[in-house]
Length: 446
Image (cartoon, rainbow, N blue to C red; front, side, top):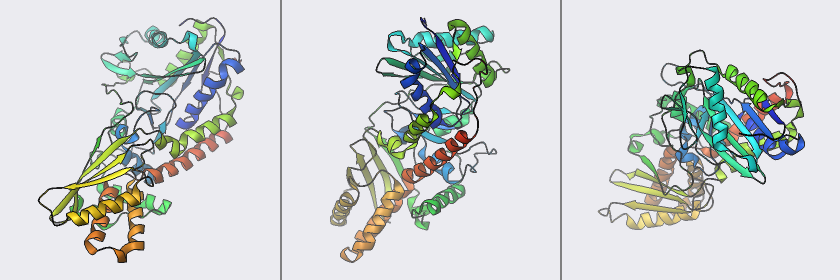
């Protein structure tokens, strides 16, 4: 990394993922020109958050069931013997790349520079050399993807964004993160109880969210033995898949390492190497940052950039002798249902006429009107049945009800809990606005 003009460094003490991503975006748009600097280093930490890339699918890259459960239960759901799980945020950033989990044990770094000086390798080499210089026991290497590895474990990954004449290189540095939470939250969304959260807690969490949002709550049939054989799979998933890797914490190699210490070390080294000045938080346009943060927290942004994919739900029991597979196709961006298909074993021919009518009704009700949200689907079906019950045969009504219950059991209520999340994010940002904020590098400002 070579710098020709003055540089600046800022260490944010905000911990809301939407606010820090927005601060990063504001710096990318304005810092080089407004503050007459050539390069910026931003450091920040976030409270627990899942952050997916711009072109990723939240259903396949994160555990939406677990996120919805934690949102509904005020973070009170525990896993195992601990109560370490809290209410994480789900965010979609403006840059590409893979899904990551942030928490207060992870240090995020952002290098902002003119596109002409953009150097992915040089940035991570500077970071690795800074760490090596302070912690002699660290054995760091950089792979071809510009990940930083320590004793074979990935401790840092990066993503990038180029816009106009400016470039952004941001990444994570795992220092003392909760790796168990990381693995759980990055498990693809399925109906499986593999998260270790008890079914009773799940029922309580979902019922609480239903009461808060006015959505139809879970019925007894949702948890009946008839739904026990359901299986959810995803297919034809477009977009950018995450590259899985073995991850580790730097504290496992250097027990004395601390996140604040590493942040201060990076600030000091950046100032020494590039004669950088400290950018004061008072020089940030926080009103503009909050506007960007609100866009990032908007469910339409988080879900709306989802590339096309298909969902298959197998084992849907319409009656004791009839099981079908329900396939929902989202051909457009945003997770909107475009096509519905029902299939069953060829031996059950007597029900085929009714199944064809049910599929046509589902297509009419859901296609182009409903997202892949189990509660929204079930609510739409219940409303339709309420208005058209007299026109339908009993098997027709029963099949639609069974399909609605099964899909509500397999597809998490994304729209409802993302609206709750947005309100929680706005409250957190408002608290930050009311409280004074200082830079962790409390020295000179520009």
